[in-house]
Length: 255
Image 1 (cartoon, rainbow, N blue to C red):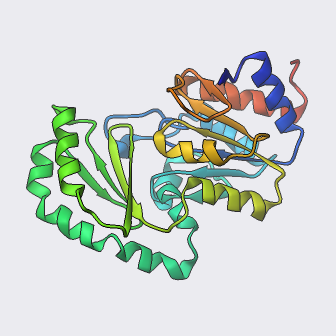
Image 2 (image 1 turned 90 degrees about the vertical axis):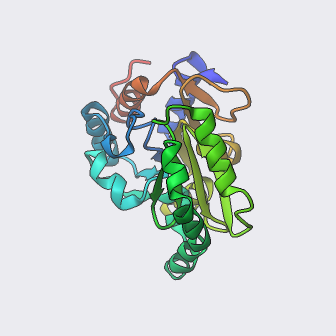
């Protein structure tokens, strides 16, 4: 994996911006810095302003683990597409209620374990089409994770469980993931390529399924085995990468 600001990365971005590209982004850790409490997250103005300009030039999508209604107020601009709950909101409307119902047995289990989870420093966030168990503020992260694993043990085949940065996510089995949502958007918009920036485990499904000509970027130092084409060292460099996209689209790039 090469750095997005390397000569190879700059050339790939230049070629991508010359095509009809859909620009897609994760939110937490990508457009917004990771913060101790999820309710405090927001996109910095430098990022929001650049994204607003990009959205006037290309279709922009935010594909996030948050509920769509939650993330819209945190963006500082209005993208053409917002898909929440790790891609699950891309489900057909007649599937949304049944999918949410698949989480009901887990909701009952979490309710019965509420005291144990709270004592371990675990906060449960129910987003209707997904449930997040946050443990970033727990005093003992290993103990909090052990309690989560105990509560989720034998959760059944109706749900899919995957990790993240100090969070464990649960979604209904069979709903779209981020890759499925993005592939569907590319087809819907008629785009012939895509950009995708993400920082976490649940973004790897996009990196794995992305065609070779997509410009995929892992935000943060590359972990072993990531399938993204490029990386940047941290979330603080996302605004710079967005500016490079703008410069290429508006003919101001000297690269």
